[in-house]
Amino acid sequence: MFKEAKYKMSEERLSQLKEELVFLQTVREKEVAQQIKEARSFGDLTENSEYDEAKTEQGKLYAKIAEIKNLVENAEIVKASDKTDSVGIGSRVTVRDLVHDSEDTYEIVGSQEADPILGRISDDSPFGKSLMERKKGDVIEYEALAGVMRFEILKID
Image (cartoon, rainbow, N blue to C red; front, side, top):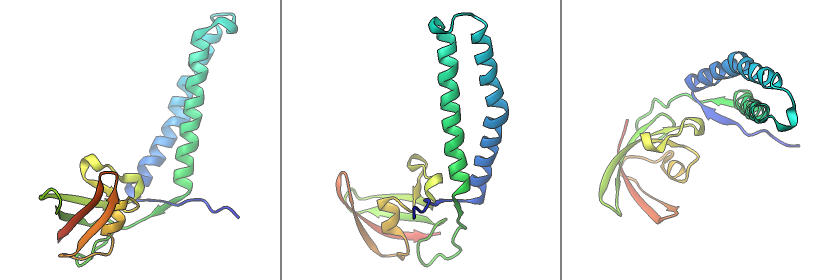
């Protein structure tokens, strides 16, 4: 029938998510419950903005808990690739942008750990997909919003 999506991540990221889930379900949930309790003590709930805010916060909290539970339950642990002859998850890849003649280094990671600003590119992104299993010296192309991007792989660590 319907197959749940798997979320690629490292063992470290899964551990961080589990810690965050425990915090939200214990400490944060108690804080929000206390806010609701205090807001109720102010009287009439129909004109009680503190109560409305506390209930909104509770809804956001439950949504965040559900999101993290889904990530944890559907986590697919990926191990960094030991090979340096081709690109895989965990590889650090130095590329030359053939359009702008510049060099950058990126780390290929699972989708839950991607942070392009820090140079951590998801293996599911168009750029990441185009790099996977490629070798030093290969020229890759992929379609981006800015047009066709062309890179040469200079180094794989």
